[in-house]
Length: 508
Image (cartoon, rainbow, N blue to C red; front, side, top):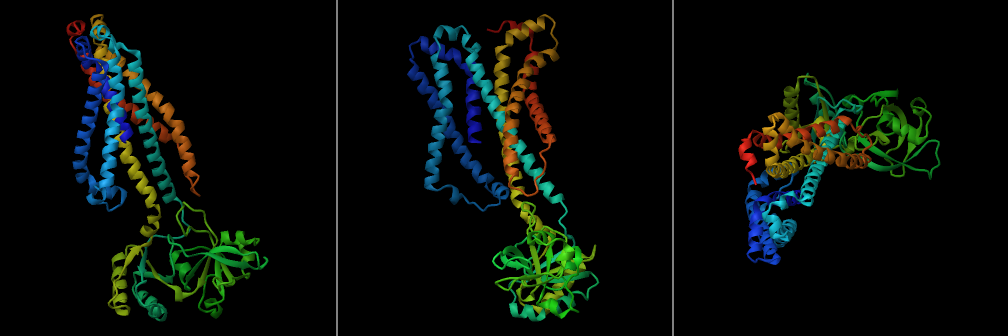
């Protein structure tokens, strides 16, 4: 943003050169040398940036709270106004002012007084090319930021729209981490039974984790049919008999855990499809009955069922081999499936049960879909930051474009008067003055689109489930930038076109 603002400052300064050209010519004719003129312009630039810096300190205090909300931080003024940061900021401001003032200082002071007083400076092709180049650079940056915002938003929506392989709706999560672990182990079946007394509760289960949080990653197993030394890493999820029904997982081979089978409590596991493929087993049906061993003892048991692949983690990651085992001693969460439109009665039942079994411990509840969506918070934050910075960059670019339009209209004042005298319509004159803007923005888009596309491809490579890059995003950005650019200069162009042609012809 500082770079965009600096570019914008240079652009506005050079656009104002017409108003200051005669001043420079007169001063040089009266004996001022280039060094004095350059010093003046550089000093003006530095003073302007220092004044802006002082104003920015006030704005920081006003905007700090909204900024913290935007980036989800808790910064304070003491964090920002440290001596080192303030000293470096002043150095950057002074340096930026010098850099921003270099071009106007050297250009305005380099022309001969006779040329400046004749008005030939304003027709400098070099100055025009520089101003147009700066506008192109600004709109290029704006286009890249806008495309980045749309890409992140599209990726986030793409991930949120994908089927997860389990039913995340209507599940209330109770975090029992602060309660005594032995009490949880002794009472978990009774707690579940008490919850199920409410007609609002459809199913309940306890588990060490839940979708959206990591289980025991990196557990080494030796699948039946492979060498003992050929261990494979899986994610193990300790749970109880009712996890499949509570999460709405889909059994595609075998069966789920059943209390009628006593061995299910310590010698049975359920695996997902990815685990079957990773272990080299031929099919889910043939995986049932295979044995998993583990040096740590978890997971260990015979495969009694295979579930359809589901997303234990966000769609930034591919689905990994997952193994469920009955191990309620490692429980932390109680997952409660609620019947539709029965949230409030279910919450009342949960509170009553919690108070009965864990008096004095705070009740912490949340919804599984909200907890799972927390994995996409990084994308949400990127969308907010990119969007905010993109809008600010576009506003700053429009300021530079307005300055360029003002300069262009002033430079062509006599031409406009001649055209109006010869019968040109207001519409045709507005089109004449806005045509250059369309060309400049089109050039910016032509530069920005390949840069943005390459960046998109690189960024999406980090996602296991990447959204396709839509041409619609490019079309939307092009339409917005062209529309905003034309709207920015139309007012100035319309005023120039509506001016009295007699006054225009008198213009020097």
